[in-house]
Length: 138
Ligand SMILES: [Cu+2]
Image (cartoon, rainbow, N blue to C red):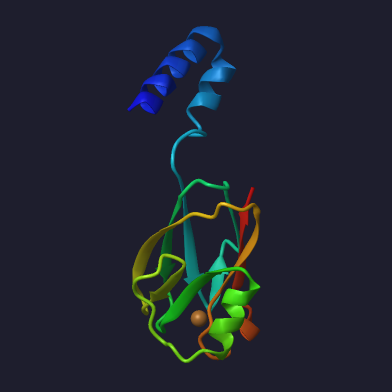
């Protein structure tokens, strides 16, 4: 609530100053981040999504393919575990999402440490086919 009031005060101040500042304030720089990743022909689009350290980002995963996919994001150890793992359905971990054929899932993730976190589909053959992207946390 306080954040919202400060934002409004800032917006009012910016409005009083310049048109340039006005457009900047409307970009939602202090609002929650979100992104949509479309899965088509077994590829993630976009292949690069940016987030901020310590701030949640809500990601809509839309699978346009007639087959299931998954979106697993994390550091190399996470991916290594999934490459060799046997679990085939992910339902309750924000960073590990199964996206059934022709459907959409929404997840919210947050990383405290800046860096590149790959997102990969670990269904057999999909990573090799190029189903890889990067969540860049700054
Ligand atoms: Cu896949």
